[in-house]
Image (tube, rainbow, N blue to C red; front, side, top):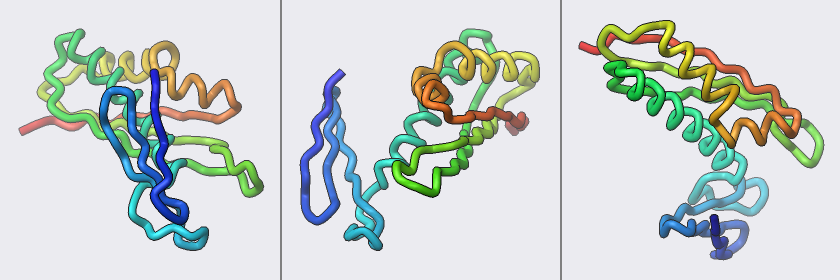
Length: 140
């Protein structure tokens, strides 16, 4: 895997992935940013949520569950002193579908948390407490 970060101005950068995609990153206005992109730590949090959501949806599809939507709501706390690492992250999966099995969704979330999600595994290895919950919603 490769990536490239290019400085734009002040504390703004463009991150380019090896797969050809780009994202603008910027700092907080209190630190010289203009609020034109994600904060780097926001990008990390989004990456962890996306990695887990990818797993959960894939596992549910393989389990032949009629999943129609999956939203991961994330809330993270950071250390007060530098380096301001994440101390804990709460992930709430809101999974929507037709006649979803609660057991299947619980299994998918558990497998992502314990086995498949490399992003949250790295965070946990660094001492971050990552908690997972889920809600089921019936699609219309």
